[in-house]
Length: 302
Image (cartoon, rainbow, N blue to C red; front, side, top):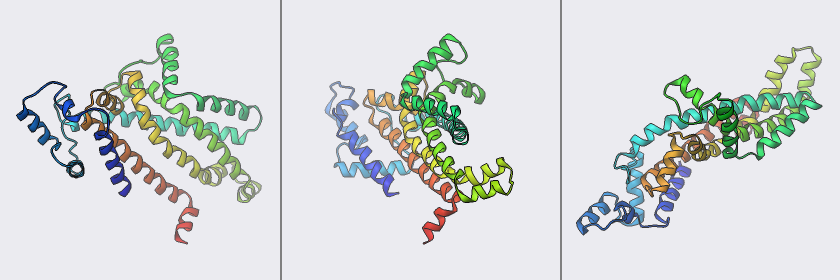
């Protein structure tokens, strides 16, 4: 809670210390009668001290009221409500790809030395070095323009259509994260395979698949899950580039629109939502880690 409070204060202060005059932005860079300017000042609390403005804004945020857009002249909540489903769908889709691709490739590299390990190491080294906007351009040219397998713009309307439209954006988001997860999974699984209890289970003749799932993958999932959680902020920030590259109407596109038009209520709302989502997801990751790894619970009790 204190972290969110501090983040909200930084977001609020950053907007007001940004270049430009908020009142001039509200006036649309046009001259207005003094009474109209006073009305705008009162509406956005610009006639009050900065700290008082922050607490007034925070009180509205607690009630889930992000105010009114300056340029669009409509509630920010409505725009967020329209954009959020696209971003949520995209991030979940990308994270699923990260977990599947990273876990499978990392497991193969850990269990099969030789050329499979070498190929995966080379592939992940390349994957880590590719920015998501470069991946978006390459995938669009190959899979959308040349092969005509996926659409290059739009986010779709219903579930399966949206899944189809967001495949390329999700892959673009997942490349770096899946490469990082694959490396962590390779190292963690290889360490677990060398543990005595795993060697004992193998010597006792337990099925290889059961031993891997119960004794290896579960114990190695802690560092892997941490990587997945740490990639959430990068993916949320990356939606700005991905939304622009694929013409998506998500939170990234909304944030970019707000920045370009100096629409600070939109910028504040989207930034705070992204920070809140990051904090909540990382707390959830810690809870899941404690459930998966009994050693964490024991450390906290001591």
